[in-house]
Length: 256
Length: 256
DNA sequence: AGGCGATTTCCGCATTGTGGAAAATTTTTG
DNA sequence: CAAAAATTTTCCACAATGCGGAAATCGCCT
Image 1 (cartoon, rainbow over the protein chains, first blue to last red):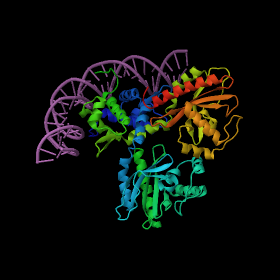
Image 2: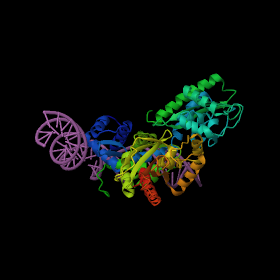
Image 3: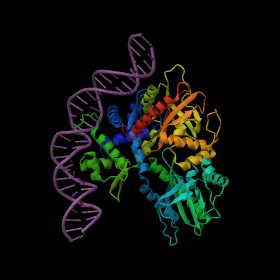
């Protein structure tokens, strides 16, 4: 009627209900939900009943409120397990590459190391090459430090307590105190810098991507040769990576 | 036709597609998905298109495969954020209480401490009382130790490295070595025991609840007075809590 | 180029979902 | 504690909506 959408009406409505429920942490009552979604009460009730049979929503008998159900959780978890955010990240990585003219990377933390899942290469002739799939200890990586900085202090202390510091280059962090200062700096400006701390001649600027719960899901970074990555270009790359990580976070959480 | 379900057909079918996609980590092609779900190709395509418009699935242009999308992730994340697993856990906690005649608890780890989210009290006259909402350091809690034991060794070492050991009772763990032995034991038998390590006269048996990705989501425990919790009853409670935690894990991941 | 499997679009039909209104239930109020 | 108000649940007749067969299109391999 209103919208010339080519979709299945009842499915669209059901999905809309799920999104409304996800947005209200206290759950919603039937009539409120119907009003919010712009549907009649009876239609809303029928759709909710269907969703409930499949476990995608759950009606709390006591408070008469509807909540997101276990099946929605089980399905959503597959998104991370399957690494389905890698392909959608590519447009952001491309924009990051184009904004900085350096290689753009996407990485996650797994078992105490940073894995670069994918990258979009710089078009420069001389470019840093560290192919996707590689593993790097957290503190030697801009992405690792950016994610680390989102943890609470307790977890960070626990991590630093047993981290095996190594002097890979003259610029490497070699003590917990230096790491703490670094983390404070990252929190202040929003992005992390790897200033030739892992490989001499390579600089890296990274920012974290947050999921819908505010949890660090992954990180974006820009890596380039130190000769090109001057202080002013590092700052410029910081703004770019911060902006695009923010956009990608928003996309992950549901907003375009 | 086949099923006398009172639900909305197209919505049920769409949810079924989501669940099939979540189960196949490599994604699925249209025709395979249609076959798996028992639908015609054209119907499947129409439903997928609708789901895609809302971002609940994503079609990878290159490989021609469909995957779970970001919106499903965003909605599913609300399940954990809203703590929607607390109410559904109650039936399991009740069964646990009835099987052991002791108080049954549900807890999570947050900021390095265990929070008891809810409990079902023992019917015994003399019962241990530690009301929901309380926070206890991880290593003093059966639930905390059970969750800790699921972490990888690296993370455990990091944790133990800065843990502030305190001798709360003569039975408390007071050194990393003892904690490591304890974790090995927990992994071997599947459940954790707090043997008067936090409060004298109180024993606790706990097992972890795993989410769809195999991640520790929360833990179940049984707590009772040491005078009643004899070694044989501890072993019995261990079997009960292990079984029910497993059932609850299965429920969380989609199977009843 | 050509053929084949898979995907996408189209369309007439009746199955299916819709929303008003009534019945049942719960909550609030007098 | 009874009556009223508000909300949830069930029911039903109608036609709008979703269905699936088939045709058109696309993409890939030989």
